[in-house]
Length: 283
Image (tube, rainbow, N blue to C red):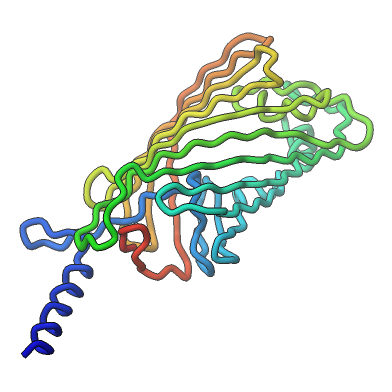
């Protein structure tokens, strides 16, 4: 009798775990709220392909290789993120290498003479970005909780860019709103320092949200930039999501101020993805 009762309870527990949430008897599947900007790496063997954001591959249990594939033909780039420790609070580092010389030469020869004249000499440039990333789950849940809710994740980041150049150069400053601070390290051994916050969570059922704000300073010399992005992520299933929102730029430089807000859209496809329980979430 005791064995039968134990088996019955085990079946009940298994059924409760399999149903992420029940509303009026309807199964509701939630999807992971963690984004590419958080401290968590993708699981080993998985590939997350993004149209605009960073694409990622989990090559080790706590390490991923990532790249902005849309930029790669003009600005080859490769990054490594390693998750050092943590469960409800996760700490990671991200290191990225960029080679922008190809893109600068392409711009010089393809109608961007207002920024780079044809006579400009472009050196070999290697830019290194180094980041510290800390993510904290605001609503941690007990391990034995059967009905799980999506993680609400707050992420802070801190980092800097520096560049190494080789050869002659008379590359002018690029004063586009999104390029001025990102290319500052190409000149006079300057460094770009940045910090930012992001909040990720569930909005409703298979709709998640993310909103962030980043501050950039060029050598703390009074020139700075502010960027913000907010998106709604619609998950068709555990392997495909579509997102849309805004991207805002504000630049305060020695040449004046610039402000721009534009719509953004992105999609993510997950390869080799397996539905699993991660920090209280299936999918």
